[in-house]
Amino acid sequence: LVNSNVSVVIIGAGPAGLTLALQLNKAGIDCIVLEKHTRQYIETRTRAGVIEQNSLDVFEKLGVADRMKREGLRHNGIYLSFEGVRHHIDFGKYLNDKAITIYGQQEVIKDLVHACLDRNVALEFEASVTGILDIDGATLKVFFERDGVSQAMNCNFVAGCDGFHGVSRSAAPISTCHVYEKEYPFNWLGILADVPPSSPELIYAFHKNGFALHSMRSPSISRFYLQVADNEDLSNWSDQRIWEELALRLQAENFQLKIGFIKDKSLTPVRSFMIDHMQFGNLFLAGDAAHIVPPTGGKGLNLAVADAVTLYQGLFDYFHKGIKSTLLSYSSRRLASVWRVQEFSDFMTNLFHLSSPIDSFEHRLQKARFTYITTSEAASKSIAENYVGI
Ligand code: RFL
Ligand code: PHB
Image 1: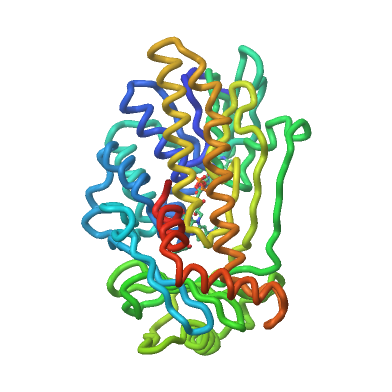
Image 2: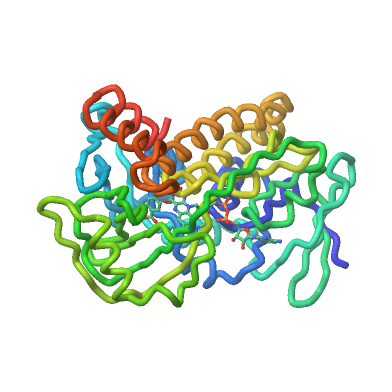
């Protein structure tokens, strides 16, 4: 058992952990990031794609946004579609310069990892955390395994940035917390295809067969999602069936779906998860470790970055000014914002997914909501403001 000391142990090299590490490093606060997977694994898995203005600003301040600004696609709006009727939400019309950037999460990870290694941030791959000891006391310790060897690290604080299935939340006395959960009765089937986008901006569509989303990664790579049953098997979805279903669900006047080679296919659960504390003694949870939002609002990555910023502010005040109150308000400050995002993500999910039969009361409510958005500037502005990020 190797013992060493560090101010902050960060568990997980996702958007939350890496953003926190770069901020601490810039402020001269020593930290180590422990990541259970290989560098290659985390730099290649396909996940989110929407970067809010707020997140871009954070990355810019950290000096890691050059490629994001060069290669990312800046979008000033999105399309909403209901049974073939399209409505454009123009961010610029309501929010001056605010926009979103379409840039794959794995590209964000590549940029953050590169910056960490370049700046000598201690970042250990294939180091899997197995436990955290004494989160309330003076002998806080993180146990991890590397190359089959168990090691331990003493620290002042632990940042649990290890995602929804990580270990840090289980080190917290969850039984004393209020847990809020919502399982939606469907999954998302996501594909990545070698084909130029069929639309200059994202399209969120309701169709009687279910939700479809048209997104993209570059001028030559498209990303699509389809609502499928929650017990769905990928083997039921041939490439041909996927393209036919996308063409049907995204159908609108003057819209022609471009079809190409599908190079990645995966299923994602759609769920909400919240707990009423993000701090447990000297353990702080950030990102998906603390909360999950359904992906329909494009918010998961952005919440992870926003958590990292607020946690960093608390740690900065503690280590550089000897003030602990900022750190102690981390949980309440973040929870208020995360609940706002939960509500928006739930709203978008309910608006565009099929969960009740066509012509049921619920379906007519969905239609009425959509019609309201297409006829009310206030409703469109509200969506723009939430989507771009408050
Ligand atoms: P991550 O990215 O899951 O990173 C956690 C890291 O912790 C590591 N880990 C451990 N390391 C050491 N020891 C252990 N015991 C460990 N256990 C786990 C993991 O290997 C991993 O590297 O969490 P973080 O940083 O909180 O970031 C959250 C985001 O990744 C997530 O919210 C988004 O991907 C969600 N999401 C989206 N978010 C958006 O903002 N915009 C989107 O458009 C968007 N689309 C999506 C999404 C997520 C998706 N999937 C696959 C869940 C689309 C999809 C399909
Ligand atoms: C994506 O491009 O992966 C994406 C875009 C918008 C979402 C979710 C995922 O709401």
